[in-house]
Amino acid sequence: MDIGSFLSRTCGGASRRSFLRAGMSLPFVPLALGAAGMGGGGIPGSYAVAADARRNSIRAKSVIFIWLWGAPSHLDTFDPKPDAPADVRGPFAPISTRTPGLQLSELLPRLASRSHLFNVVRSNVTFAPGHPDAGTFGLTGFPEKPLPVKPNFGSIIAKYRGEKGSLPAFAMLGRGIPKDVVRIVDGYGAGSLGKAFEPFLISCSEFGEAEIPSLKLLDGLSPHRIHDRRTLLGTLDAVRRQTEEDRLHDWSRLHQRAFELLSGPSGRKALDLTQESTETRDAYGQTSFGQSCLMARRMVEAGVSYIQVNWSEYVEAMTPNTDFGWDTHIYNFELLPDRHCPILDRALSALLDDLSQRGLLESTLVVAMGEFGRTPKITNRAARDHWPRCYSSLWAGAGMRPGQVIGASDRLGGDPVSTPISPLMVGTTIAEFAGLDTQARAELKVLEGGTSVHELLS
Image (cartoon, rainbow, N blue to C red; front, side):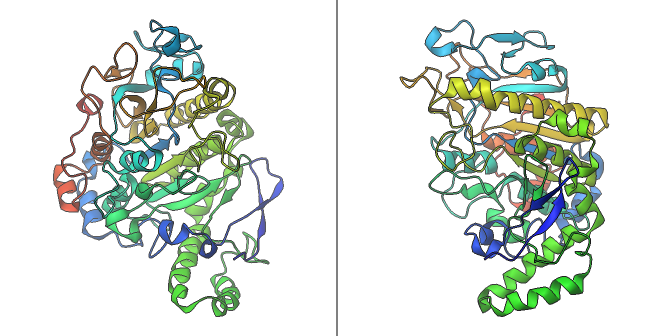
């Protein structure tokens, strides 16, 4: 159901139409933003009290988890193999970085010049071959089954920390819930923790226009009038009368939560990229991913605990009506140099620079990774297929010692030759940075059996 629109300013200051779509008509809304929803329901509980009591041990006040959905080729980005046979190493040359012994692909020159700000892990592994199932592993640390699905790392931190004012504790920036052409990733949200800790989904266009897919504001309501609660609720009465009774309660909570975000000064400020200079916006790049990374930085400044930035909604790189994910079964060696790597290199470098220059990197954890890697051997379609046995990730901030290469793959990039780092270890390490020690995780009954990557935490 479409319920109107309003004009909002863009990054450049010109008026453009910003659409906030009605969640009731979208099949994913009851999953993504339902119930008390979108980040904690305003009930921090004993876990938030415990987090507050242990706040001195928190190294990451905020986490930015950059989800490179579709799975980048590790050999063509963070783990090049220049001495491998031609049908493995591919056409891209390695380049040196500021870190002795670390080479990256020539497609990432900006990141190569900033290697003193981050660490590269080269021994990630996962245990599922397909996108949705590996996606659940990558976002929760556990398989899809047995049910119930385990919670996203962001939902765990949202429950532990609670909300701050009108802002969600867990924000997900992207066009929609990560999916392939068949189904969504089951582990995108709160899972067994309940809908109160689902992510608050926000989309950011290449122009910096923010959209909230769960809600489209009504005709006649401008951003300047949204502060009038009675106007909003009164205008919704007509909508309520046309809505099925069993959906009224969820709708009420949805618009209540969206209203709180849009009407609160901290929420509105975090979403308003027009406050940024043209120079800053350009540094991130005029792409949806770049502007989403900029919005993530603003959310860090506003105190949001966990921000997941999705590269795309769909994994597919070339399927019609998708949005150029990293699933490069075809055109891997065309898309990476022409599109994917320049966008990633620019936006992620700008984010690291921006956080560092503002004094935020020391208290912010940045993690960038996909759900698996891609085949060492180039396929007969001149591309690379799925490869769960080995892949890479980038880690920065939160007081960690940067400039490290952690783990290693074999000479073909096919398997780790050091300790394999599983998705559960990734989630446990993020939790440790965010202040969830073994006791806190046991109390929440999350990340059971997980161990951390001690080289990152030391």
